[in-house]
Length: 129
Image (tube, rainbow, N blue to C red):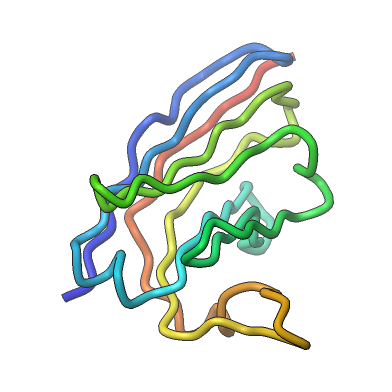
């Protein structure tokens, strides 16, 4: 059974930091490609970061250098450390699990198509200027 529970959202001022957590079931953590998405009001949901089983990470250009995705295998958990937050980062953040991983030439490109994602309920991040 796929289970994803996010936590750690909140309100911060621009330039601040937040750390999001996603607790997954052992089955989900071991068998699915996991990542973070976000959806701002009036906008489509977009990918933020994904992590391969060995920790190889892929980031959206908008968060590169500011966000770090990490995993704790002992806790079946995925994290998103968000630094230098901007008002444009304001969104509902979702943990996602996908049954597929995409590789090209042996390089991890990300998780499979998002229409196949399983989703957590989300956690709100609000960044004020």
